[in-house]
Length: 542
Image 1 (cartoon, rainbow, N blue to C red):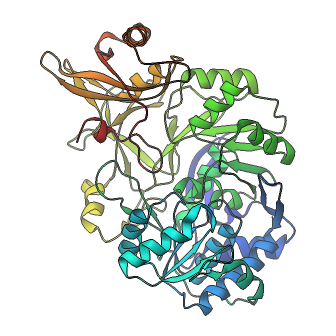
Image 2 (image 1 turned 180 degrees about the vertical axis):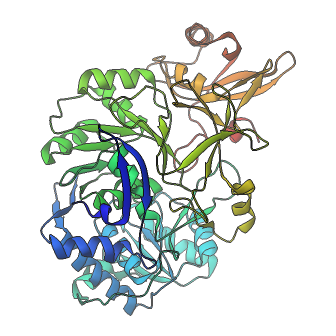
Image 3 (image 1 turned 90 degrees about the vertical axis):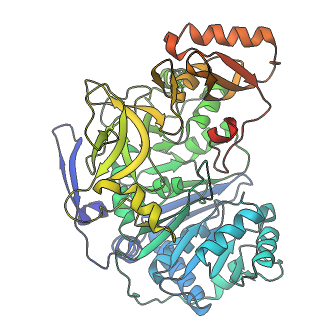
């Protein structure tokens, strides 16, 4: 029996589709002890982590290995002064030490702050000061130690420093220190309500917000892994994500291990579709999740047979219908879109037997989700409203953020009216499926109509000359706003008046008249957040 069943009550129908799920866990629930160590005690040789890199190095870790190494890591950190409530930044890319470190921090009751290796010294300065970081564990690659030192010199902070590789002044050798650390670890006191993770969101305006999740957060990913990604007992799940992003928590650790499924990790820097599919086939990956960008590359390069793959899912950005259709034709699998935020776990997805291209799917049975207007009233079917989460019972539901770091005002704002406000606009069809309309601050009002930019971007991306695009509203004396597309041309295409007219005609033949693209601007690159999202405010000159 999968360990997740110990912490929840689930109701399924005759097809095995989830209808409701409620959690039942002790007040001192701790993923490190109650999941990792519990599995290690009962089935020590059960596979937990399959890791390889582009150089051909390979490691397969059992749950007994994860327990032993996380205990060692916890002892190492504790000897360095790290304990309950202390904040530790992890900049480890896809190195397997991330899994040892994350579980070790959970066992100590410390707060893990995953961060991407792409952060600049300035980015690090802000995060280190905001979170009052007491230790940093980092990779030696990509000049990360140099940027960390630069940030520390600018801030005057002096956290404990460990690096995976030796030879960096001021950094202790994490790998060597781990090998010397003791293995035994007594259970440390923690509470499910304690802070466990801080993720810094990459918002389009202002400084990133520190999103706090507590120790109950992993349990809310049961639905993410088991019912959306279809992570199976003794299967092998592969999510393409670096550990610095919340997507790693969605697909590389919590829900998968709760479901009894091993995690596949491929450590790479430059994405190569051929190598990716070779990894899937070599190790027998059974379920796969990646952003639409990865699927676009796979479709363009040609998808080989992947006989072990049983399920494919996607999230993070819009999925072009052409990619959905071609992947299904070639791989025989429908891409199942899912929706959620850094502040939440999975809120909606294409569950069950049928996936509908372009749809956010249906709400997770774990949450009570509605579409509401500005007054907090439910909107009728077919009309646009904001996606909100209504708590079940008293208090905050696990899986929704426990707070924003030192920003109680922002936390109260997203929880105004007693519901969690996502800020995302959507509408529901007659079948109960939801369709994304855009962020409220990105919605274009033109000629009395409301247009979500993603509706237009979805069509633009079907044109072969459009590699990337962003759609915004610009002032227009006739319509209030006109729809403008900012386009990065694809390889082999040069900006020209002829290409502009061709793209306009292509799109406008496929769009309702009120969604027509009126202006096209060609650029060499789009302004993006560090996580790759297009900064619409920058496109608007804000």
